[in-house]
Image (cartoon, rainbow, N blue to C red; front, side, top):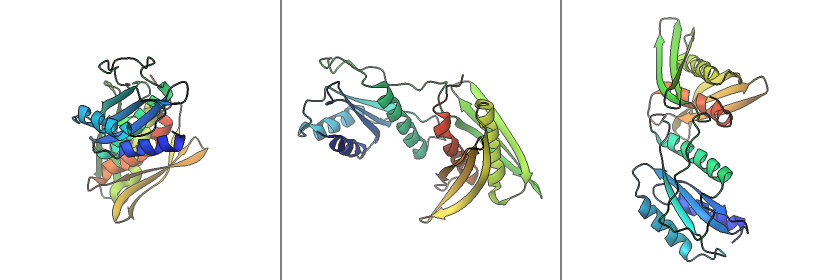
Length: 248
């Protein structure tokens, strides 16, 4: 089975109800040896595993897949929304590809299930804990609390001239909290805007990293508060950079 076929199989598995992500790993000879699928907490993992096995049973994979693992993911919370779970699945896929197969013995019994890959708390992306926006006649003040790991929490604050929805001050407060968590990387806000795309509201945030280049973050409101959406969009702009940093 060629790489394109494996990519198509990954897409097929991701389309199964309840599956958020999937990685197909190869053995030393290049043949597919292990499938890792990622689902939301509370999903029937045995049912997902059976569906995956049904999908691959009649495929010509060159050699049989020795292991199919299904792991439950818990988003580090942007209040447990689907977007956060999808990002958690992306992170799990990256970790699975970098770590490689969980088992090296192709004859290992299926009943032996290794522990799911865990996020290194030092590399985990910041999670939104709290957000508050207050306004007077002319000014707006924002406070954003971010967490990393179980006990680490930092608060960013900002105030500026009052603007519609307070997007600028919310994004600035978010970046202030990020700077506390990751002092070696400096992000500067370029712009923040509420837009309508395909009849859906979204917040777009552009951030510059250390005077090098601009990065775009985006988040759909999905009917929720614009304040939280702005923080999620700001984190979206910086999270890919933060995910690769080892920060104690």
